[in-house]
Length: 200
Image (cartoon, rainbow, N blue to C red):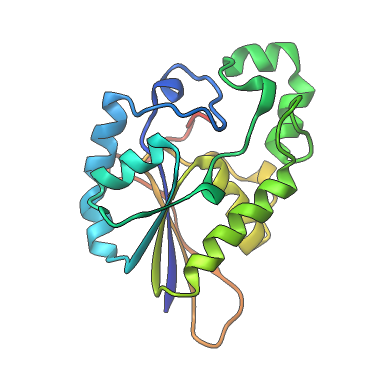
């Protein structure tokens, strides 16, 4: 059975302060490094045969801490570009534009100078599925928005119905031989327990 192993990077400095990052190249917090190290034995047990990773530092550092030294960086796996919301506190965005924020979470609104959701979903799906063609167990170390987009594209789940997965969590999709549709095997698993209010 072919499997996609989707890992969100560990907590970043801006995750910790609840600021939107988008494509800003923010590093991991100390807690984020600990989260990634805690997940490493789980990833080793899942035994991926290929790893691709967003080229942003928080994802690349997570892949290194997971022991994936041969991970192949791919800019197509970058987080969605949030335009003028980059670096802003989520609470401030909600206070200033609650409808816009809800629309953004639902995939129907782009911040000023930000990326359109469908274009984001298309590029992340292409990067992932291109890698999946040559792997039985593909590990994708990426971002929360990327995982939400892939769940929409591959499982048909609307983004507004998907909670953000926690930092350094793994979500697994499987594809049985002869089947074209993916199925969800594991969602938002972390060895440190579930994070139910994960930051965007």
